[in-house]
Length: 87
Image 1: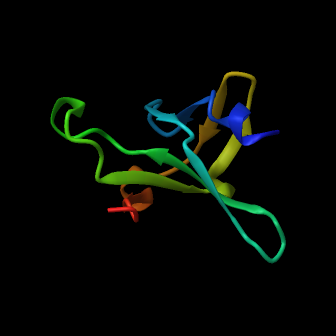
Image 2: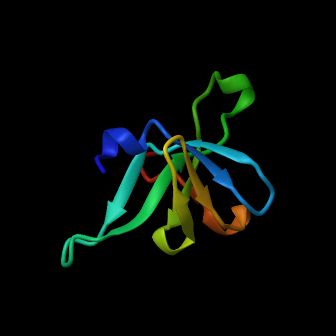
């Protein structure tokens, strides 16, 4: 599967049914070439006018199923929220 195909899929947390958004990037291990995490933009600040400060970094072990339209993950939101590194 290509990254452009992953970006079209919604990510849903099976713990609470919350839609987290769409994949914007991936992390991978340079040594073995395996994907280690998927990255999803976090919630917008103030009506979406001021960008985002956080992103969801979801380890690949938490990805439970990749379907045609959706990616199912099993995570605790508080544990996967990270500050954006590009800020």
